[in-house]
Structures are given as structure tokens and as C-alpha cells.
Image (cartoon, rainbow, N blue to C red; front, side, top):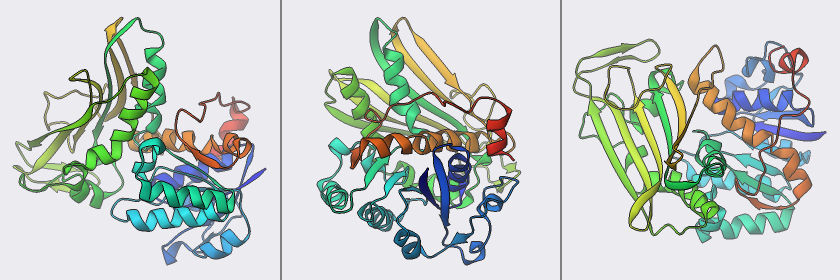
Amino acid sequence: MISTVVWGTGNVGRAAIRAVHAHPSLELTAVVVRDPAKVGQDAGDLADLGTPTGVAATDDLDGVLAARPQALVYAVTGDGRDAEAFADVLKAVGAGCIVVTPSLYPLYDPRNAPAEMMEPLNAAVAAGGGAFFGNGVDPGWGNDILPALLTGVGTAIDEVRCQEIFDYSTYDAEDSVRYLVGMGQPMDYEPLMTAPTVPTMVWGGQVRMIARALGVEVEEIRESVVRDALAATVTTEAMGDFDAGTQGGVRFEVQGIVGGEPRIVIEHVTRIHPSAAPHWPQAPNGVGAHRVIIEGRPRIEVTLEATDEGGNPAAGGNATAVGRLVNAIDWLAEAGPGVYDAFDVPLRPLTGRLGAAAREAVTA
């Protein structure tokens, strides 16, 4: 069994605890929190497992690392705290941990990551013998390995497009929705998520990885952002009112330019209410979906819907992203020290977890 720590108990951390608890090769040995109110609580309660795990949350990271765990799922956000998150990860890798995380966007594509990140990360790997794999929460596999796989059943490719279509009123992070994404803010407010260069920082690596898989060079990456104002005030169940005239939708693209044309595109279509920007693409369930479209011959379109925590699409997307990371840990343990990306780490069948007994491990 691979002793595994989960750091964080928010939207991503809850899913991580459940995924580690269910994995037959992993043992949940610690949960690290920053909120004093969560210290001492059982991980099963924090992750809504419905059963105790016997693992009490702690804020003593040094004590946890001193016990020499083999793996760490770093589920603490890196938004607005990039340097702190990177320092946390370096500390764990330097202590010999396999670290998997969605929190450090520039490291999704290590081959093109900044030297000021790669040099200390490689030094930590060399010093401690740890490993690192970063992948996205939107979810990462939908922006890298899935579109690359789908191109393999085509004949000719004109464009690869990855879409996230999402109603953010279902997302359990109001501050992020209102300020990071900008929902409910005046139309002259500039949300951090779509500020110039930020979309490229977050998703540009995956554009480049798809290009690498297809054997082409991205000449440049362009950003396109369109915002839409609410025609009328709307009321959401979880976050209250969003006023008429404020931002109700934002649509942006990160475009990989090949041969002078946008050929690899990661697109987000985001709303705070179904009435916002009704002319934009819609999810089949009216709430959230991920879609890959291969324009070419044949034209291929795959739409995915995932739900968790009572049917919530946001929780479902988080869970699949976390599943990709957690299910990679045993492979990374065999692969040995290093820094890995989505095309290094195989996406494998979920062996040994078909049927009622497997479900009980997650929702006992």
C-alpha cells in the first residue's frame, strides 16, 4: 500500500479523499488542513464519505512529512497564492513524496514551463527522490489526452476544440465566482481569470501538448474574450442575486496558431444563469458539460457529463480531474523520480473496482 496524504478539503480535496480511500493500492494516512475548525475532524466527515476513516485532520505539515509518506495529493488552490503553493510542493517533493496536483498551471507542460520553476523542481526531485505530475481541474484529461486520442480515429484534421460549458451558480466557491471569474461585477471590471496572459498561463501548456502529440509547432498563442451582461436581475439558490447590467457570462478561447490559423483551441463558455448569453453553446443538461470537437473528416464530437455530490456537475468535473491524478499515483511509484506530464502518464482502466463492493468504498 502506498501511504498517501491529501492536503486540502475544499471542492478538490473532498474528491481526493474519496478517491484515495477507494483506491486498492493507496492508504490514506493523513489529511492536512489550514482551517483550525477542521483540525481533529475525521476525514470521512470532511469528505462526506458517510463513514469514519480513522484519519483525523491536522495542520501539522512538518509532522506529516516527517512520517515519510510516499504520496501527496496537493488540493489547495494556487489561485492568488502561486508562490506559496509552489513552495509547498517543493517541500513535499524534496521530502521524497510523489506529488500530484491541479494547482500549478505552468507545470502542466513541464517542457515549456519557466526555468525559474523547473530548476528548483528538478533540484527537489534530485535531492529527495520524489516525483511530480500536474494536471487540470476543468478537467485536464479533457484538454490533453482525450482530444489527442480522438484524433487517432480520424482521417484529416482541420481543428481540435476543447470546450467547457458551465453554469457557475452551481460552483461551491462564491468569492471565486464573483471576483476571479467576475460574475455580477460591472462590465468594466477585469476578472483575473480572463486578464491578458492569464488564460495562456493556465491553458497554453495543454494547447502545446496537443500540438506536440500531433507533431506540429504552435507559432503563437492568442487569446479571445467576450463578456455578456445580464438583461435582468437573476437570483441563484447558492449565491443570491446578480444584478441586471452586470457580467452574467464570459466566453474565452486560448488559440494555438498553426499555419497562421487557430487549429487547437481551448474554449470556456461560462454563465451565472441559463438566461445569460442564450446564443452561446449550451450543455445538454442545461448546467455543465465538457466537449471535444474534431473538425475534419470525419467530424467528431464527444460531449461528457459527470456529476457527484448529489448530482452536481461542478463536483463531477472535479472528481474526474482528481481521479486522473490519484489513479496515477501507483504508476508514478513504479516509474520513479521525475517530473511528468499528461502524455507521460498513461490513462488506464479502473481495474478491480466494478460492482457494489467498489461503490461501498466510496459511499459507505
